[in-house]
Amino acid sequence: MPALQEASLSASDSTTTTAPASPTPSPSSETVLLTACDTAEDSVTESGAELVCTPDEDGMLVWMTADKSKVLLADRAAATAKAEADKVASKKALNNKVIAAQKAAAQVAAAQVAAAKAAADKAIANQATADQAAAAEAARVAVEQAVQQQAPVQQAPVAPVAEVPDASAYYPNCAAARAAGAAPMHAGQSGYRPGLDRDKDGIACDK
Image (cartoon, rainbow, N blue to C red; front, side, top):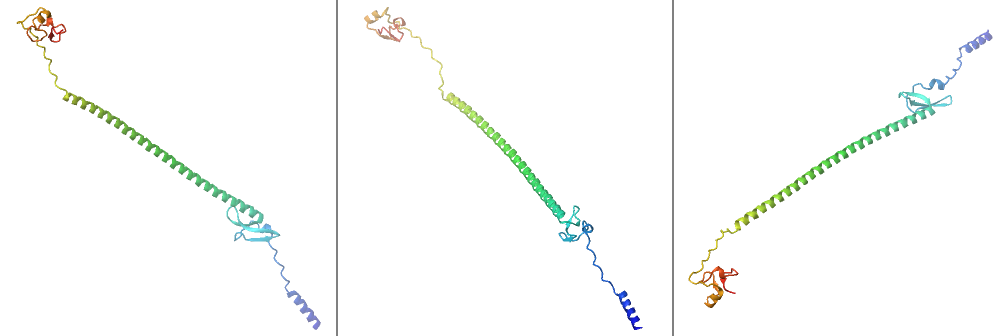
């Protein structure tokens, strides 16, 4: 009897004893790869492969191999750098365009100012020429008026009074006048007559 009870107890112990739980196998890389993860840049090693939590093309955090993560992140960084460079280049081109437009506007304004100044200078020069011409004409008129005002009044020429030979004495020639002691005879004197005044100097028989 005791032997039977002992055997029974041994059997009971053997049936009630719980076998140790086998460890849960780690998920393979196929089950973890491309599944969602929580924190970027977290990494795990599954079946000898390193998996990194990385944002995919849609921005979702998923597990992917370290090599693919590096390539994706490098491509993304290059795309970001290119976009930033394109943005900077576009901004620079816009600034250059604005500067060129401002420069062109300044050149147009300067040309307009220069044209206005040239027109004003020409108008001033024309006015100065006209003023000089007007002053010269006024001076000429003033000189003419002054000359006219200062010119003596011309008297009408007086007709020479015909000298009437004195009839009280008559000499047929200068020899007779000399013989009478009357030569030379001046116009208006007794015995003077134009016939005896050969050179018509108003003195008869003087030669």
